[in-house]
Image 1 (tube, rainbow, N blue to C red):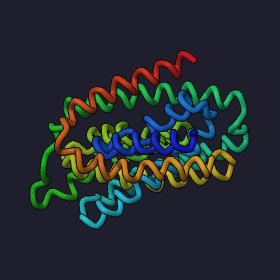
Image 2 (cartoon, one colour):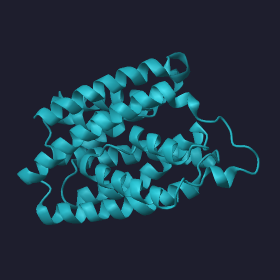
Image 3 (cartoon, rainbow, N blue to C red):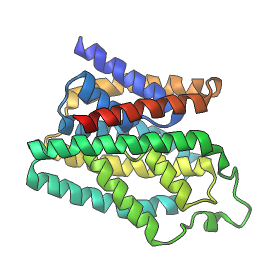
Length: 263
């Protein structure tokens, strides 16, 4: 019975990801904790690889379409991947399954979900404010941050957050990119966010796997449901108001975040 439930959970999250581009880690980790009573360290580790595999196909597709600004991806990755490795080393020393780490993961996950809820709502209300295209000759300027150190700093924060909670590389990452690169068109912001999330979640996920924090059979069932869910969601995207979906999603994430903090 749990097998079918895991596949259905994967399908639901995949559907939301396909509709909005948000929800991989933000939804899957709390679903695993609340509905399946999975320990936080196993939920986080498994969800990181779930996110890496689900976003990999989208990243390849965007790269072929030449809409990924690799300079932006490189700058964010320079901060996020080292931070993820440092966080994994600390988890290895302390013990990912220890009670202190479990409590830290739960409370940090709650805060991350509240941040994601706020970022999702902000994007639903203000997402259309980004420019649609970049003027000819302004491509390099659009891919330049307000200050060179900001992508490294925010990348490090997101890398730590993602490694601890599996949340942060989606809506939070998009909002950070909108603030750091105000001249960059929204499609390129989303493309950069998806592209840099793949190596980050893959490194963090494999690191968790080395700590024994990944349930491989569960991961396979989640992916079996998510892949068709993403396909269906991406085809329904143009028929359902994105702003309504994102607003409802932000309420759901805020509720889950508040409940985790209260545990």
